[in-house]
Amino acid sequence: MDFLYQIVIYPIQLFIEIIYITLYHALEHVAGRSGYAIIGVSLAVSFLTLPMYVKAEKLQDIQRDILKKMEKKLESIKRNFKGDKFSEPFYNDSIFYGCIYISFRTSPFSR
Figure 1 (cartoon, helix red, strand yellow):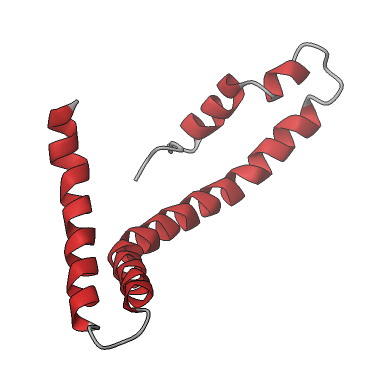
Figure 2: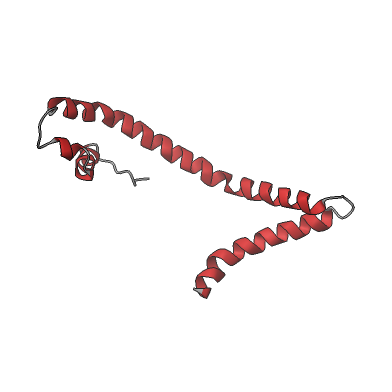
């Protein structure tokens, strides 16, 4: 457990501490310098995580486009089998959506 802490958490903690201490000492003659240092750390972390956020948004847009394409097929299947006692529980099952994903040659986990 200590090994994972040293590899994952400690570098992040060290980075945040370095930014905080640097800003705290840089704002030596400013009242409320610890508050400004915390705001600076918040901005630094936000700017560093911005590329990951943008990438996640792009992947989510791709997934939305795929779901829009699949929506027509899903509606046609549901319309054709409406009222069928055996198939209605199938619509709520993950196997049904898995078959649709396979027919569109995609996956919710792709990309």
